[in-house]
Length: 306
Image (cartoon, rainbow, N blue to C red):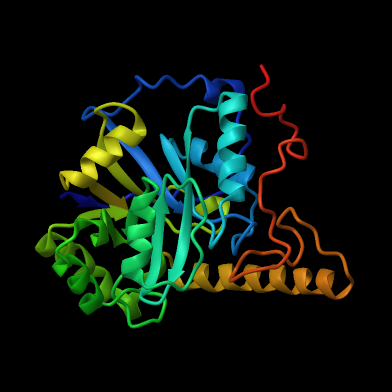
């Protein structure tokens, strides 16, 4: 597997214009690679930008697909997929969820139904597979409760039933790649190689300017989903990316804290809103969490309408 460095795509993101929407799927790299960022978050969980802004940032970054993987919820991802399809944006939005388990965070792609948190990592992987999803271990190895340990990953791969095996693990996640964690960020791709697990990369972006700064690359052998499934099964993946600076991480934490304080004030004042802008942040939970995406509120026609 090739692990190269992708320069930061800094600066403000522009809106998607007509020229950007006309990008041909045949405009591929010399190796005909698909570029994906499967791990991003929106305002619906602990991100600071709404799903439309995040998708536009992914298009500007030249991605073929972006995974909207909010914590413990799917509604923003479903909304984003509907927007992209209805408006003809040149990108595939993957409905995903980052699930909190007792063994660490799990990135679940191509989800149909939300999976509740705090099952074991082993059982959560099986639940993802039962609904046809792909299970990627998120930011593994650092000694934090939200990161799967090497011992946990090895135990999963020792299971006789492949339903408990992850489809991949992040070989690079810039949120756990700073100087203090560099030992584990370098260990992750080596462990994936040793255990025969496909290594992926994802930005874990919580704001638009970070979308696409880390990517997973796979050969185009069909649709995005077909190509990704084949690449994971055959361990034919590549990733590229660069770590976030500590100043960037601190700035992101400051913005998240500000968002949470504003949302807390909204709750205290009885102004809970069900669109991700009130206290219903979805992380780690919220009684006001919407059960379904409101198409009318997003300006989209009823499902099934021409």
